[in-house]
Length: 270
Image (cartoon, rainbow, N blue to C red; front, side):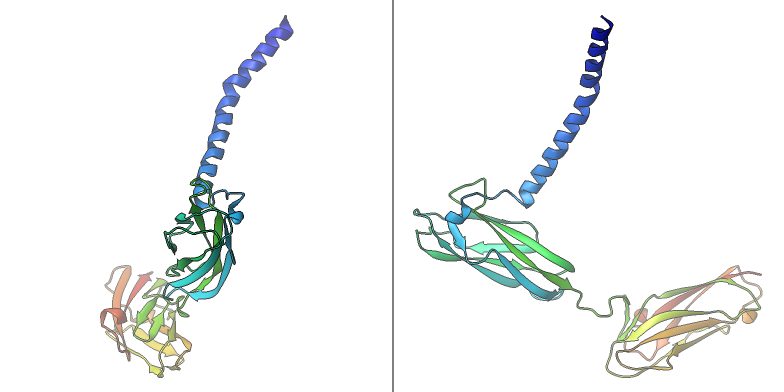
């Protein structure tokens, strides 16, 4: 009798506890399957016996993120014994669009599917798919067309996000921490001359306790350098708050005033 009660008790625990996990797992699997069926649906097993494509994969090579959209053409032939036509083509990514002729494809007739790939803001490895549906089956596509490649950044100075005309810089604000009257700290801003002429830079609106120069003193075309801001702690105003702030203008550049501003913050220790 005790064994029976123990079995019933174990059965009760299984019913009470495991269905939740089981349903969660099934629903989870169902969710993933549903999502995958939209992005990568199962192909019709006999799809290749209906439309036969010259190639199902095309490698686009290296593209730039500012390239114009490119078109890739896939040729096919109706190798079946009946009239068919393409009903739709779905793509796995918004970067790719498809076009095709919505006309009857007689047995032995040929045609093309065009995929247009837009590389804008798509830096990285590319693998995008297009699924071809016909009158043979509205549920399963007869073919999966694939484009692969790589999109690279067209801006070689993208690690220097701020532009001052031909000068690109890493940041437009510098912070000096724990400045006392006995030190003369310096802060550097990485920069690059993206133009075709040498740059000789200077600064305006600097307070008496700050100095500016570039290293090198003249930055060659296509080369990196540093903007160096130095603060003389002994010259800081005596009757000021613990935090000082000023903005200066970089001269020697053909750029708007707002672009040439650099903000400086000094955290002072008495």
